[in-house]
Length: 392
Image 1 (tube, helix red, strand yellow):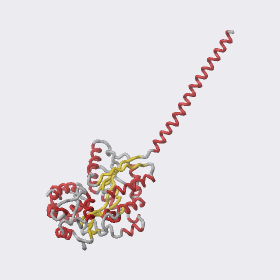
Image 2 (cartoon, rainbow, N blue to C red; image 1 turned 180 degrees about the vertical axis):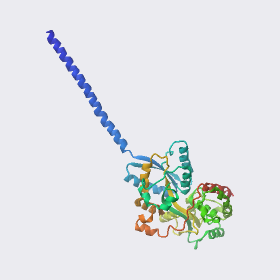
Image 3 (cartoon, rainbow, N blue to C red; image 1 turned 120 degrees about the horizontal axis):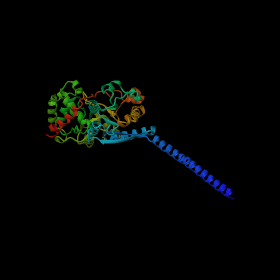
Image 4 (cartoon, rainbow, N blue to C red; image 1 turned 45 degrees about the horizontal axis):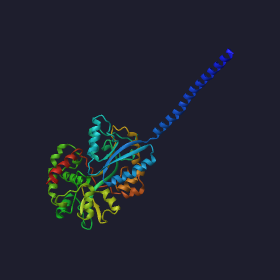
């Protein structure tokens, strides 16, 4: 009886022990089976998340409209990259963006969360001096091979010249039968037609900046438009004297509208008959019926300034691969066709890479303008204009 009872107890203990071990083993197996799929799922979600980069750009509404079109096109074809556009309206100043990139570098904080930056030539050259921009190549951006080599060489491959435009004279052909052919004729027309000409504050838009700069350099050797040495500023005196004298003949006896659009609005309303304006803005607004059908354009000789708008990649951005992917798209014939049709500007890539229709439409159209590159002197120019011309 004792043996039987002992045997029953032993069997019970053995059964319990086996169940316990089995339960522990089952628990571990279950733990592994539940955690493994969970981890795999998390990793899959993480892998599927697109790389997001910040793109800062400035300009008039047509520039915003362009990126509002191109970015969704890119993201549709490239699900692994997300572009976060940060639009700074023209006239509010791009300088704080540049300062932010510079400050981040100096503080050892990368690129200040700015991964791509759009602006003009002066910011390319400033960034070159400050060591801000990444050197670009066709190895990382295949379609960069479609850009004119001399254009890239001029900027040491520190930016992508993705589109071009030029400042021209836009005028009401009902009131101006024969537009001025050169600067002397333009100044003479302004004086003979008081308050019928306007140019915007140069610190708020490139067309006004071009008028001021072209006037200053009228009295200097042609090669001076590529000189960024501050010593040349003393030779601006004659140009500033002329701008000051013209002040009493321009719109409102010395009223300077804000932004490129400000002068276009005056031309549209008939308050003035002639302005300096960006060719792409004139063509775009004429096509949309926002400018009168009587609006025509003419380039003076030697020409106002023109040339590319650039995209720069901060050297310290940690999203450069994603940015390269986007830039390669921007330089594709597909995206460039949108740029031409939307901005009415010249393509950033060589015309030979575009459709025959687009090639034919630009025959002779990109001639006449000049590319000014005076670096940081542009800031000094606008400051002096404010004190000597606008403040009179």
